[in-house]
Amino acid sequence: MKKQILYLFSISILLSSCSVFQKNGKNFDDGYYTQTIDGKKQQVYIDVDDETVRIHPVESKQGLAVVDSSRVLLLQQEVSSTDPLPPLAFHKPSFDIDFLTIPLKFRPAQAGVPMQLNTNLNGAAYFGYRRDQYTIKYSSTPLGRSERSIQHFGFSLGAFTGLGNTLISPTNTSNATEQEYDGVVWSKGLAGIFAVNKFTLGLALGYDHLLGSNRAVWIYQNKLWYGLAFGLNLN
Image: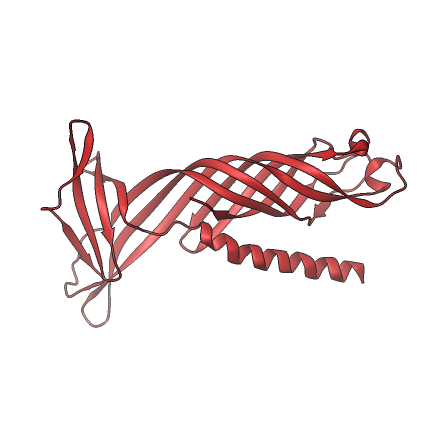
């Protein structure tokens, strides 16, 4: 019965986390992007609405970025030509601030205890460097027209720190305690976040530091674990 409850709890965490983590995906919004033209990187400003993507060149004047509003490339949602523009790629670097949760932690075998797959509540602040690429391309339709599509790929790498809980028992303390309770741990480590269109996944490497008197006997104290991470973008 306990295994069934644990399984259902794990599934509920994964489903809820997946719905939250979709918010981490970066939308193709208005802003400054970098485009490579003839092997040279050029800054552009993109204005996006439901039907039209407007691309303006950006010039540097006295060290300031100035948008040239008189020049614009219009990319409609649908065009009549079956020979449209080639794919256009735009890049956008950013500093990523996320709220991260790691619902699954894989712990290698320690002190005679077999490898563990833990599902514990936890939350952490994540800070990292992010780079997103958006590719706009047109595909021909059977009606002799072409429709616009936008493909997204993103990657972020950074560090996290936060608090969580874990089961403390005689098994994972080498029988140094007879109590079973939920201990508080301080988690820290590195995480990588990958995004392809609507699919987003994070992988984490971290360490847990038990807060309390049993930290010296807890077999997982500051031992490496591997985790599946989900998050909510805050910026």
